[in-house]
Length: 398
Image (cartoon, rainbow, N blue to C red):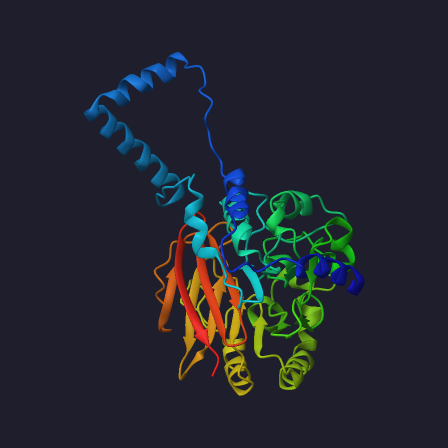
Protein backbone atom coordinates (compact mmCIF):
# COMPACT_ATOMS: atom_id res chain seq x y z
CA UNK A 1 0.00 0.00 0.00
CA UNK A 2 2.81 2.43 0.90
CA UNK A 3 4.53 1.83 -2.46
CA UNK A 4 1.31 2.48 -4.40
CA UNK A 5 0.63 5.57 -2.33
CA UNK A 6 4.14 6.90 -2.94
CA UNK A 7 3.87 6.20 -6.66
CA UNK A 8 0.58 8.06 -6.90
CA UNK A 9 1.93 10.95 -4.84
CA UNK A 10 4.97 11.31 -7.08
CA UNK A 11 2.74 11.91 -10.07
CA UNK A 12 0.84 14.55 -8.18
CA UNK A 13 3.69 16.46 -6.53
CA UNK A 14 4.98 17.80 -9.82
CA UNK A 15 1.73 19.62 -10.63
CA UNK A 16 2.37 23.33 -10.74
CA UNK A 17 0.13 25.29 -8.35
CA UNK A 18 0.03 28.16 -10.87
CA UNK A 19 -0.53 31.65 -9.52
CA UNK A 20 -2.06 32.65 -12.84
CA UNK A 21 -4.91 30.82 -14.51
CA UNK A 22 -3.42 28.93 -17.44
CA UNK A 23 -5.25 29.00 -20.72
CA UNK A 24 -5.09 25.24 -21.16
CA UNK A 25 -6.91 24.76 -17.82
CA UNK A 26 -9.89 26.71 -19.14
CA UNK A 27 -9.70 24.76 -22.37
CA UNK A 28 -9.82 21.52 -20.37
CA UNK A 29 -12.92 22.80 -18.61
CA UNK A 30 -14.51 23.64 -21.95
CA UNK A 31 -13.74 20.13 -23.20
CA UNK A 32 -15.63 18.64 -20.26
CA UNK A 33 -18.69 20.90 -20.47
CA UNK A 34 -21.82 19.25 -21.87
CA UNK A 35 -23.31 20.81 -24.98
CA UNK A 36 -26.30 19.54 -26.90
CA UNK A 37 -26.07 20.85 -30.43
CA UNK A 38 -27.60 18.17 -32.63
CA UNK A 39 -31.26 18.70 -33.47
CA UNK A 40 -33.44 15.62 -33.33
CA UNK A 41 -36.29 14.92 -35.81
CA UNK A 42 -39.58 16.16 -34.44
CA UNK A 43 -42.33 13.62 -33.87
CA UNK A 44 -46.04 14.51 -34.08
CA UNK A 45 -46.23 14.59 -30.31
CA UNK A 46 -43.33 17.02 -30.16
CA UNK A 47 -44.94 19.23 -32.82
CA UNK A 48 -48.13 19.41 -30.72
CA UNK A 49 -46.07 20.28 -27.64
CA UNK A 50 -44.27 22.93 -29.65
CA UNK A 51 -47.55 24.49 -30.79
CA UNK A 52 -48.85 24.56 -27.20
CA UNK A 53 -45.64 26.14 -25.96
CA UNK A 54 -45.88 28.84 -28.63
CA UNK A 55 -49.09 30.11 -27.02
CA UNK A 56 -48.23 32.15 -23.97
CA UNK A 57 -51.22 31.19 -21.80
CA UNK A 58 -50.95 27.51 -22.73
CA UNK A 59 -47.24 27.67 -22.05
CA UNK A 60 -47.77 28.99 -18.52
CA UNK A 61 -50.43 26.38 -17.80
CA UNK A 62 -48.33 23.56 -19.23
CA UNK A 63 -45.24 24.46 -17.26
CA UNK A 64 -47.27 24.94 -14.07
CA UNK A 65 -48.74 21.46 -14.43
CA UNK A 66 -45.34 19.94 -15.10
CA UNK A 67 -43.84 21.54 -12.00
CA UNK A 68 -46.80 20.52 -9.83
CA UNK A 69 -46.47 16.92 -10.96
CA UNK A 70 -42.73 16.91 -10.38
CA UNK A 71 -43.21 18.52 -6.99
CA UNK A 72 -45.68 15.83 -5.99
CA UNK A 73 -43.29 13.10 -7.09
CA UNK A 74 -40.05 14.29 -5.53
CA UNK A 75 -41.34 16.51 -2.74
CA UNK A 76 -39.78 19.69 -4.04
CA UNK A 77 -38.90 21.39 -7.29
CA UNK A 78 -35.35 22.14 -8.34
CA UNK A 79 -34.04 23.74 -11.49
CA UNK A 80 -30.72 22.64 -12.92
CA UNK A 81 -28.57 25.16 -14.71
CA UNK A 82 -26.37 23.58 -17.38
CA UNK A 83 -23.38 25.81 -17.79
CA UNK A 84 -21.35 26.34 -20.91
CA UNK A 85 -19.20 29.12 -19.44
CA UNK A 86 -15.76 28.03 -18.26
CA UNK A 87 -15.33 31.48 -16.69
CA UNK A 88 -17.60 30.40 -13.83
CA UNK A 89 -14.75 28.28 -12.48
CA UNK A 90 -12.06 30.96 -12.21
CA UNK A 91 -12.81 31.37 -8.48
CA UNK A 92 -11.43 27.87 -8.01
CA UNK A 93 -7.89 29.09 -8.73
CA UNK A 94 -5.65 28.61 -5.70
CA UNK A 95 -2.67 30.97 -5.63
CA UNK A 96 0.87 29.61 -5.45
CA UNK A 97 1.14 29.92 -1.66
CA UNK A 98 -1.50 27.19 -1.28
CA UNK A 99 0.72 24.12 -1.50
CA UNK A 100 -1.77 21.51 -0.22
CA UNK A 101 -5.17 21.32 -1.90
CA UNK A 102 -7.96 18.78 -1.62
CA UNK A 103 -11.68 18.15 -2.07
CA UNK A 104 -14.20 16.73 0.42
CA UNK A 105 -17.30 14.79 -0.64
CA UNK A 106 -19.52 12.29 1.14
CA UNK A 107 -22.68 10.21 1.11
CA UNK A 108 -22.35 9.81 -2.63
CA UNK A 109 -22.58 6.09 -3.47
CA UNK A 110 -25.68 5.79 -5.67
CA UNK A 111 -24.37 4.47 -9.00
CA UNK A 112 -24.41 7.95 -10.50
CA UNK A 113 -28.04 8.67 -9.61
CA UNK A 114 -29.62 11.43 -7.52
CA UNK A 115 -27.16 14.10 -8.74
CA UNK A 116 -24.08 11.97 -7.99
CA UNK A 117 -22.97 12.22 -11.63
CA UNK A 118 -23.75 15.97 -11.62
CA UNK A 119 -21.59 16.51 -8.54
CA UNK A 120 -18.81 14.38 -10.06
CA UNK A 121 -18.83 16.52 -13.22
CA UNK A 122 -18.59 19.74 -11.22
CA UNK A 123 -15.77 18.28 -9.13
CA UNK A 124 -13.97 17.47 -12.38
CA UNK A 125 -14.53 20.95 -13.80
CA UNK A 126 -13.39 22.68 -10.62
CA UNK A 127 -10.54 20.20 -10.38
CA UNK A 128 -9.14 21.17 -13.77
CA UNK A 129 -8.40 24.60 -12.31
CA UNK A 130 -8.07 23.88 -8.57
CA UNK A 131 -5.81 20.83 -9.19
CA UNK A 132 -6.43 18.85 -5.97
CA UNK A 133 -3.66 16.69 -4.58
CA UNK A 134 -6.16 14.26 -3.07
CA UNK A 135 -9.84 13.79 -2.19
CA UNK A 136 -11.42 12.92 1.17
CA UNK A 137 -14.58 10.82 1.34
CA UNK A 138 -16.59 11.29 4.54
CA UNK A 139 -18.32 7.91 4.20
CA UNK A 140 -21.49 6.17 3.03
CA UNK A 141 -19.55 5.31 -0.07
CA UNK A 142 -21.83 2.52 -1.33
CA UNK A 143 -25.60 2.65 -0.88
CA UNK A 144 -27.86 1.10 0.12
CA UNK A 145 -25.83 -1.13 2.45
CA UNK A 146 -22.14 -1.37 1.57
CA UNK A 147 -20.22 -3.99 -0.39
CA UNK A 148 -21.42 -7.59 -0.33
CA UNK A 149 -18.87 -9.62 -2.28
CA UNK A 150 -15.23 -9.43 -3.26
CA UNK A 151 -14.80 -7.57 -6.58
CA UNK A 152 -18.28 -6.15 -6.08
CA UNK A 153 -19.55 -4.54 -9.34
CA UNK A 154 -20.79 -1.61 -7.27
CA UNK A 155 -17.21 -0.34 -7.15
CA UNK A 156 -17.21 0.23 -10.91
CA UNK A 157 -20.79 1.54 -11.11
CA UNK A 158 -20.60 3.85 -8.10
CA UNK A 159 -16.97 4.92 -7.91
CA UNK A 160 -14.59 4.14 -10.78
CA UNK A 161 -16.87 5.01 -13.69
CA UNK A 162 -18.49 8.03 -12.01
CA UNK A 163 -15.22 9.70 -10.98
CA UNK A 164 -13.25 8.79 -14.11
CA UNK A 165 -12.31 12.38 -15.02
CA UNK A 166 -8.58 13.20 -15.27
CA UNK A 167 -8.59 15.81 -12.50
CA UNK A 168 -10.12 13.30 -10.05
CA UNK A 169 -7.49 10.62 -10.65
CA UNK A 170 -5.73 11.36 -7.37
CA UNK A 171 -5.65 9.43 -4.08
CA UNK A 172 -9.04 9.12 -2.33
CA UNK A 173 -8.84 8.85 1.47
CA UNK A 174 -12.06 7.28 2.75
CA UNK A 175 -13.78 6.52 6.03
CA UNK A 176 -16.80 4.25 6.41
CA UNK A 177 -20.34 5.38 7.14
CA UNK A 178 -23.17 3.46 8.78
CA UNK A 179 -24.46 2.30 5.37
CA UNK A 180 -21.01 0.89 4.60
CA UNK A 181 -21.46 -1.21 7.75
CA UNK A 182 -24.78 -2.62 6.49
CA UNK A 183 -27.40 -0.06 7.51
CA UNK A 184 -30.16 -0.32 4.91
CA UNK A 185 -29.88 -4.09 4.52
CA UNK A 186 -32.92 -6.33 4.53
CA UNK A 187 -33.59 -7.78 7.98
CA UNK A 188 -32.03 -11.15 7.18
CA UNK A 189 -29.32 -9.92 4.81
CA UNK A 190 -26.02 -10.34 6.65
CA UNK A 191 -23.75 -10.25 3.60
CA UNK A 192 -22.28 -6.76 4.05
CA UNK A 193 -18.54 -6.92 4.70
CA UNK A 194 -17.01 -3.60 5.84
CA UNK A 195 -13.50 -4.96 5.29
CA UNK A 196 -14.15 -5.10 1.53
CA UNK A 197 -13.61 -1.32 1.47
CA UNK A 198 -10.11 -1.62 2.91
CA UNK A 199 -7.20 -0.73 0.64
CA UNK A 200 -6.26 -4.42 0.44
CA UNK A 201 -9.41 -5.27 -1.53
CA UNK A 202 -10.28 -1.95 -3.14
CA UNK A 203 -6.93 -1.14 -4.74
CA UNK A 204 -7.20 -4.26 -6.86
CA UNK A 205 -10.23 -2.60 -8.46
CA UNK A 206 -9.17 1.06 -8.25
CA UNK A 207 -5.72 2.07 -7.05
CA UNK A 208 -6.88 5.51 -5.94
CA UNK A 209 -8.76 4.14 -2.93
CA UNK A 210 -7.12 4.42 0.52
CA UNK A 211 -9.43 3.39 3.34
CA UNK A 212 -7.91 4.93 6.44
CA UNK A 213 -10.62 4.95 9.05
CA UNK A 214 -12.73 1.95 8.18
CA UNK A 215 -11.09 -0.72 10.27
CA UNK A 216 -8.37 0.64 12.52
CA UNK A 217 -7.37 4.16 13.39
CA UNK A 218 -4.76 5.60 11.02
CA UNK A 219 -2.96 8.93 11.05
CA UNK A 220 -1.81 10.12 7.63
CA UNK A 221 0.84 12.78 7.30
CA UNK A 222 0.26 14.23 3.85
CA UNK A 223 3.47 15.54 2.30
CA UNK A 224 2.94 16.91 -1.19
CA UNK A 225 5.59 19.52 -0.56
CA UNK A 226 8.60 19.62 1.75
CA UNK A 227 6.85 21.69 4.40
CA UNK A 228 4.62 18.89 5.81
CA UNK A 229 1.71 21.28 6.25
CA UNK A 230 -1.04 18.81 7.04
CA UNK A 231 -1.74 15.77 9.16
CA UNK A 232 -5.04 13.96 8.75
CA UNK A 233 -6.59 11.83 11.50
CA UNK A 234 -9.27 9.35 10.40
CA UNK A 235 -11.83 8.12 12.92
CA UNK A 236 -14.27 5.24 12.46
CA UNK A 237 -17.29 6.86 14.12
CA UNK A 238 -20.09 4.30 13.53
CA UNK A 239 -19.01 2.06 16.45
CA UNK A 240 -19.41 5.07 18.76
CA UNK A 241 -23.16 5.34 18.09
CA UNK A 242 -25.12 3.33 20.67
CA UNK A 243 -28.41 3.22 18.77
CA UNK A 244 -26.81 1.01 16.13
CA UNK A 245 -25.96 -1.76 18.62
CA UNK A 246 -29.47 -3.20 18.58
CA UNK A 247 -29.76 -3.31 14.79
CA UNK A 248 -29.53 -6.71 13.04
CA UNK A 249 -26.95 -5.42 10.56
CA UNK A 250 -24.62 -4.44 13.41
CA UNK A 251 -23.78 -8.11 13.93
CA UNK A 252 -22.29 -8.79 10.49
CA UNK A 253 -18.78 -10.21 10.54
CA UNK A 254 -16.34 -7.39 11.27
CA UNK A 255 -19.28 -5.09 11.93
CA UNK A 256 -20.16 -2.55 14.60
CA UNK A 257 -20.62 -5.06 17.43
CA UNK A 258 -17.12 -6.39 16.74
CA UNK A 259 -15.65 -2.88 16.61
CA UNK A 260 -17.43 -1.20 19.53
CA UNK A 261 -15.10 -2.79 22.09
CA UNK A 262 -12.17 -1.00 20.44
CA UNK A 263 -13.63 2.49 20.76
CA UNK A 264 -11.87 3.42 24.00
CA UNK A 265 -8.49 2.18 22.75
CA UNK A 266 -8.89 4.00 19.44
CA UNK A 267 -9.80 7.22 21.19
CA UNK A 268 -6.61 6.91 23.23
CA UNK A 269 -4.63 6.39 20.02
CA UNK A 270 -6.24 9.47 18.50
CA UNK A 271 -5.43 11.57 21.57
CA UNK A 272 -1.79 10.50 21.50
CA UNK A 273 -1.40 10.90 17.72
CA UNK A 274 -2.74 14.47 17.72
CA UNK A 275 -0.64 15.38 20.76
CA UNK A 276 2.52 14.13 18.99
CA UNK A 277 1.74 15.89 15.71
CA UNK A 278 3.97 18.80 14.69
CA UNK A 279 2.04 19.57 11.49
CA UNK A 280 0.87 23.20 11.25
CA UNK A 281 -2.60 22.07 10.13
CA UNK A 282 -4.44 19.24 11.89
CA UNK A 283 -7.69 17.86 10.50
CA UNK A 284 -9.87 15.07 11.91
CA UNK A 285 -12.19 13.14 9.57
CA UNK A 286 -15.17 11.03 10.61
CA UNK A 287 -18.52 10.08 9.13
CA UNK A 288 -20.82 11.33 11.89
CA UNK A 289 -21.01 15.02 12.85
CA UNK A 290 -19.92 16.30 16.22
CA UNK A 291 -22.08 19.40 15.75
CA UNK A 292 -24.83 19.64 13.15
CA UNK A 293 -27.92 21.66 12.25
CA UNK A 294 -29.25 18.93 9.97
CA UNK A 295 -31.85 16.21 10.44
CA UNK A 296 -29.69 14.02 12.70
CA UNK A 297 -28.29 16.89 14.75
CA UNK A 298 -25.33 16.58 17.09
CA UNK A 299 -23.99 13.08 17.74
CA UNK A 300 -24.16 12.78 21.56
CA UNK A 301 -21.46 10.11 21.81
CA UNK A 302 -19.03 12.35 19.91
CA UNK A 303 -20.16 15.64 21.45
CA UNK A 304 -19.33 14.34 24.92
CA UNK A 305 -15.68 13.72 24.00
CA UNK A 306 -14.47 15.36 20.80
CA UNK A 307 -14.79 19.12 21.45
CA UNK A 308 -12.45 18.85 24.46
CA UNK A 309 -9.95 16.80 22.47
CA UNK A 310 -10.09 19.03 19.37
CA UNK A 311 -9.76 22.22 21.41
CA UNK A 312 -6.93 20.87 23.57
CA UNK A 313 -4.69 20.09 20.61
CA UNK A 314 -5.75 23.05 18.45
CA UNK A 315 -7.27 20.98 15.64
CA UNK A 316 -8.34 23.22 12.78
CA UNK A 317 -11.17 21.31 11.10
CA UNK A 318 -13.44 18.35 11.77
CA UNK A 319 -14.81 16.98 8.48
CA UNK A 320 -17.87 14.74 8.35
CA UNK A 321 -20.78 13.50 6.26
CA UNK A 322 -23.92 11.61 7.43
CA UNK A 323 -26.10 14.70 7.08
CA UNK A 324 -27.11 14.98 3.40
CA UNK A 325 -26.27 18.65 3.16
CA UNK A 326 -23.42 21.17 3.33
CA UNK A 327 -22.68 22.96 6.60
CA UNK A 328 -20.10 25.12 8.32
CA UNK A 329 -20.23 25.63 12.10
CA UNK A 330 -17.75 27.31 14.45
CA UNK A 331 -16.87 25.83 17.82
CA UNK A 332 -18.43 28.00 20.57
CA UNK A 333 -15.67 30.08 22.13
CA UNK A 334 -13.10 28.93 19.54
CA UNK A 335 -13.85 30.27 16.04
CA UNK A 336 -10.56 28.77 14.80
CA UNK A 337 -12.11 25.28 15.01
CA UNK A 338 -14.63 24.67 12.22
CA UNK A 339 -16.99 21.73 11.76
CA UNK A 340 -17.55 21.12 8.05
CA UNK A 341 -20.29 18.79 6.85
CA UNK A 342 -19.84 17.58 3.27
CA UNK A 343 -22.49 14.90 2.88
CA UNK A 344 -24.19 16.19 -0.27
CA UNK A 345 -22.42 14.03 -2.83
CA UNK A 346 -25.72 12.77 -4.26
CA UNK A 347 -29.22 12.78 -2.74
CA UNK A 348 -29.94 15.56 -0.25
CA UNK A 349 -32.78 16.36 2.15
CA UNK A 350 -34.85 19.53 2.31
CA UNK A 351 -33.88 20.93 5.68
CA UNK A 352 -33.83 24.41 7.13
CA UNK A 353 -30.69 24.14 9.23
CA UNK A 354 -32.92 24.22 12.28
CA UNK A 355 -30.37 22.94 14.81
CA UNK A 356 -29.28 24.90 17.85
CA UNK A 357 -25.72 25.51 16.66
CA UNK A 358 -24.94 28.99 15.37
CA UNK A 359 -24.37 28.36 11.68
CA UNK A 360 -21.99 30.05 9.31
CA UNK A 361 -23.43 28.27 6.28
CA UNK A 362 -26.09 25.68 5.47
CA UNK A 363 -27.34 24.32 2.14
CA UNK A 364 -29.34 21.26 1.08
CA UNK A 365 -28.11 21.44 -2.51
CA UNK A 366 -25.92 18.60 -3.74
CA UNK A 367 -22.26 19.56 -3.84
CA UNK A 368 -18.79 19.32 -2.33
CA UNK A 369 -16.08 21.31 -0.54
CA UNK A 370 -12.55 22.37 -1.50
CA UNK A 371 -9.82 23.26 1.00
CA UNK A 372 -6.51 24.93 0.13
CA UNK A 373 -3.74 25.29 2.72
CA UNK A 374 -0.71 27.56 2.95
CA UNK A 375 1.60 27.96 5.94
CA UNK A 376 -0.50 30.74 7.39
CA UNK A 377 -3.94 30.53 5.76
CA UNK A 378 -6.70 28.10 4.77
CA UNK A 379 -9.25 28.81 2.06
CA UNK A 380 -12.54 26.87 2.12
CA UNK A 381 -15.09 26.86 -0.71
CA UNK A 382 -18.51 25.22 -0.95
CA UNK A 383 -19.56 24.27 -4.49
CA UNK A 384 -23.02 23.24 -5.73
CA UNK A 385 -23.78 20.74 -8.49
CA UNK A 386 -25.07 23.55 -10.72
CA UNK A 387 -21.58 25.17 -10.96
CA UNK A 388 -22.23 27.75 -8.22
CA UNK A 389 -19.43 28.56 -5.80
CA UNK A 390 -21.89 29.23 -2.99
CA UNK A 391 -19.75 30.11 0.04
CA UNK A 392 -16.11 30.92 0.75
CA UNK A 393 -14.10 31.86 3.80
CA UNK A 394 -10.52 32.05 5.04
CA UNK A 395 -8.92 30.96 8.32
CA UNK A 396 -5.64 32.57 9.35
CA UNK A 397 -3.07 30.83 11.55
CA UNK A 398 -2.16 32.76 14.67
